[in-house]
Image (cartoon, rainbow, N blue to C red; front, top):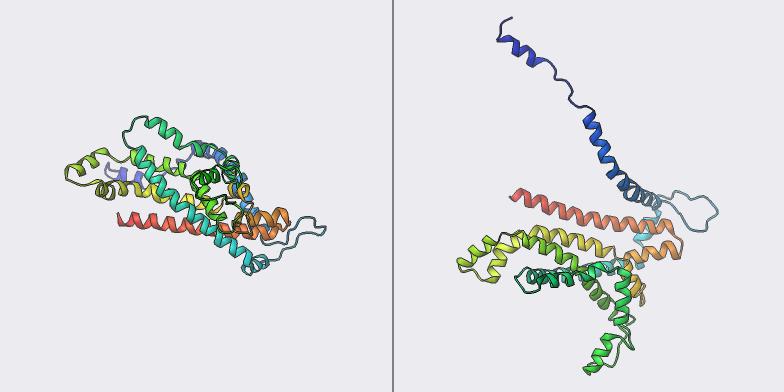
Length: 309
């Protein structure tokens, strides 16, 4: 054997499997994080999907039967559900868009070198720290027709004598949208403010030296850096708003006349008021499908943006 052939023979030998106890230990480290996700998220989701294909009802003495796509067929023909679905989309878009625009303006303001900026930032996130039930009760008092702050202010300004904002068919949904925008704006502001602070200040200074005005600096420097954060928080806000329940339930319980009955409220009524668990589960599957579609569009946009880079 020559020295030149020895390395070749050793290189042809199969390499030993280097995976050892450390790799299995890594799996054991991941398990504590996976178990709560599987138990609290994946398992209920799978159970709900399976329930949608049954005739499960409350108070039944007979066994639950597998009925296939019958619930989904009834759902496709249910005009009340599609009306609630339309209201849910109007609500989600009507809250998400103003929420983002107002939060963007507030984030730009809080990003400036202002006096007492720390206090302004603390006050801006107060609605985020309040539970939705408390927010709903507070705004019910504001909208109260006889002694509410809003109607009292309008009377003092001689603009109106009093209006029941939450029971009027024409103002109930806009009034609830205002509350949704106010309650959800702080979290959007925090996300956008974090994105603004990650934008290098040198880029703004260089653009200002080149003679760029405030709008041009925002369009060419701020927005390109902020765009990924803006798209992410907007997609999340749409999902959260479409799945809203507690805030609208406290304010109007879906009334008047179903004008604020969001899909989640509709499913809640079918399940816990009328006992139609299988039918309510089918509604939940439809809403999960909408969320999956939004996430797919979001992911496709991210992948397309990565390919363009």
